[in-house]
Length: 138
Image (tube, rainbow, N blue to C red):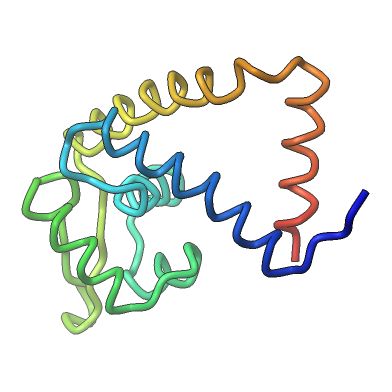
């Protein structure tokens, strides 16, 4: 087997990722991207959070989180609130509409995953997930 350069490996992984993102955006016609859904999922799982904590947890820049949260807020999927003791501290919290949007995104994600993995047998699926977990561990 010919060994690939790191650049070829990254390129091939990017092709799969970009293909998935394009399919996701076509399937989930809500004018929200994957990063928006990740923010909603973080808020569902972690509860009320400071934007800086969300950005750090998701590996986003503070500016990116500001942009994402602005859109989520305008769509009433999250609300902003100030800390009672220090009004300079802002928290984000998911709304019931945000929870519903996240539920719908999860359903569409399951459909996409099913289509993507239908070409793989159970052992290949298990191996792929194990490889991704191993490669993403720090």
